[in-house]
Image 1 (tube, protein in one colour):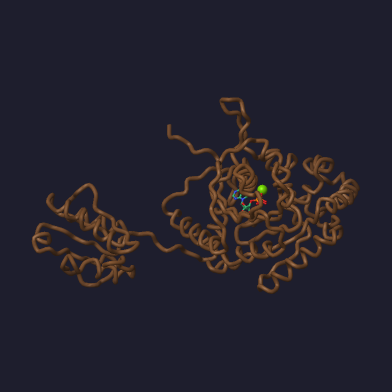
Image 2: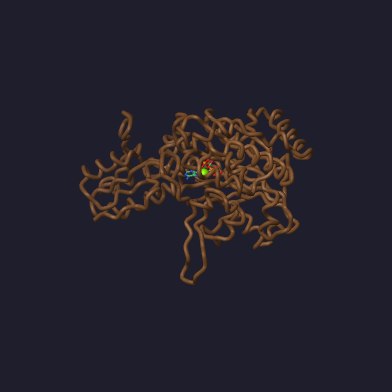
Length: 428
Ligand code: ATP
Ligand code: MG
């Protein structure tokens, strides 16, 4: 019997990994250009960390976490998101002690959701966090940074929604009104919402049930309960976005699925991917560091779902630069293999970023040329006994009707470099 993969956990195959690498490279370059540094975190944390940060009464903690007891009897959980681990690492490594940190990380996250397009049980995120920054300038900068990613990649079918959740006291006042409202329509609520009414009424606003949407639309909005300082914070954020030319809509019902957010929340949504429209989401979490045992530290962060990002990039007509080989080295005759290895190494030494595929496993000239063709390489370099004796190499274009040639070995690297448009390394 063939082994089966775990449901909702996908292999990322070579034909798509070029796009992943390309997009990851672009995001990495952009976030680093804003001064963010990489931190690599464990995939597994104590269950308690997620319960305390994400919140007990959330979809993630109630039904989506992969939680298990390890052999020592500790309850551990595969991380469903990165912020909790990031804050934990900041505290345990003393990174937040009188310091500010701009950090990013990327990797797999795990949530036991119902798998469908854009929703998997192992998925991947880019996660960017600024710890120790009160904003709203950093809030704006983070949004501007995400906007740069889209424009750099020619992705346009994305809209920015922003909202503010105020401070906890303002949210408590809002909560009372919300409970009153949802109680008055209790007979129309679904099971989840009824339960949430007592435990975490704001979560009702995050319901994905289409039957709940009408009630949610008619619910009172947080904006009417906002404290003055949060209102000012929000106004400044909007002014900064306006000045930067970043368009947004205020969605007063945007609450996000995790409990730790306050003030600014935002989401980039698209209509290009069916119902899984949130590509990138985030917000401010000024209380979380303290809640997890650190000093009070304002912070904000966002995460991008890489699967949805890749999907959207392709739906926007984007393609990653091909990662096919530039040249395939063919060695005919036993004596030629040593020379061919040396030649392949020499090309890798002398041409920056060249992709050289060496024929492996021998074979006749004909079968090697077949492999060369299948490899999608643009050129074949051919070494036989005659070429070796003459200190030359055969040079054969595989994808164009350029002439085949016999080239002096010293000329090969400069010629190939200019044909494939890659530079010779320094000193060559
Ligand atoms: P959704 O509303 O789609 O469930 P979310 O609010 O749970 O998203 P976050 O926890 O904010 O999402 O995660 C940030 C990003 O990670 C999302 O915007 C989305 O792109 C991606 N994401 C979240 N859950 C999944 C999943 N199960 N599979 C693939 N991507 C996901
Ligand atoms: Mg979700």
